[in-house]
Length: 585
Image (cartoon, rainbow, N blue to C red; front, side, top):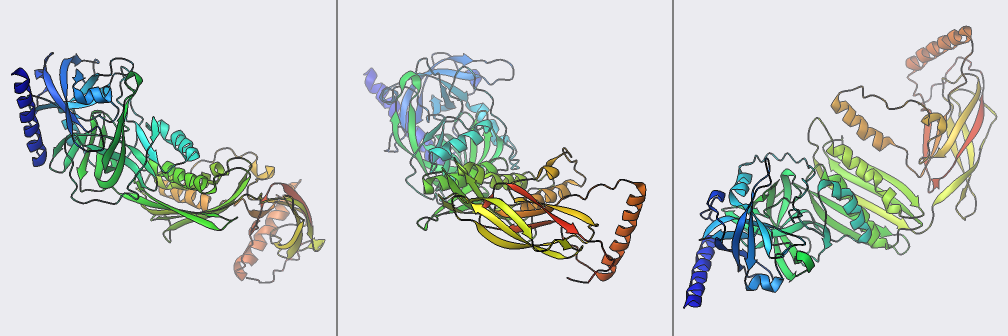
């Protein structure tokens, strides 16, 4: 009779639970001050690929108070066929709603590792409900997570998909300081993660939170605690503890539950459609809105293997977050390169990226460069992309809009480096403003010498005497330029400094450029010499202004097909300036 009554009670409880879920309305809650030791209740979760939300029994063991400033937690013990099957509380059950007498008391939030796998903590529902009161102004600054206490599992276990082993190491290194730890691989069966309108979630059902979706995925899965109309609460603990956020909410399927030693079991799950936006990532859980979608940045990476002409294209969407975008965008490009070429040793890579943004005139921030490394060339090849995204996302005057990122990569196993052998001018004596032609000889790595001619125009202002040219590749900076100076102070407004940073990156030397730079003229020894030189330069400037002469730059750049690995110097003798300028545009 007692068993019959017990089954009848359970069926009634399930019926009430199903009705409340189908109505998508807030259930009645039981506050923490009403919780007493020995109370019995029921929790709901999904543990297998049937998708059925199943109950398990809960017994309250007490309330844990971690002291001033810390939230109280309910300690409980699980029992019943469901947890017997799983071997206790698993990672991925976080957020599972817990009811006593049909009233919601909170969410399963953590198991106690290395203790009893059936003992767990419950985040009180009133703590979670406060998340809905938090402002949603998309202040998307990521903070480091608070350290977990009592060895609980209060931090999400993150999944990744699409990244190879090299890409994952890169990803973990960049994201770990932001609270992304404990990565595990997952298989995403529904590729490209389309948007699904009018999706529904039930308390006890799995769902995902992601920062990247598409051919690459980064996120975590957990369980829905409560649904109120289009609003949801889940997890019972933070995702990254980042506050007001702009992340993907995704539907999810449990693949299988795997029990583990010392309570380290896990529900393996995959995510599918984008169904809403996660807008809060707080101590007591995450909150989101169904049918509202996050601002995103699409990224496309095209990788070409020059040896066989094969091109692979990868596409993903990054949830707009000014801290995460540079790291995720770079990790995606790096992993696409690693996956396609399947060998990152002794390689030469050309990288071109185009970032559509409102931060630059013309709307496209574009940069191209060539890289060589004897080990992992991808590590150095992606530095400029991360630098550019970091600058764009660190605008202190206003939020920079980034509309899309395109990365084009060409890779070959050959070493495309060369050494400068000589530079011979075609004449011994030249006048200021005159062009001299230098016959360049270079020695490519394990190839025959190559010769070519490049022009150089002597600065009009150069006085009589020797002129020394530093000739080097774009990857090297001569000692004369790199000495002294220290850190230069900012002299403009924040907006001007931001634009200067963008311009500096765009104008930086490329590794496959040949750079000609004029060394400073020898210092004048006497006051008389200095006064005479100042007068000469004043008269010269007057002539230049009157004639509208375009003064050539003291640095000249030429694109070549190699990365130059050394510096040479050449001396040109400058004749005495005759005081006349032939007008040339």
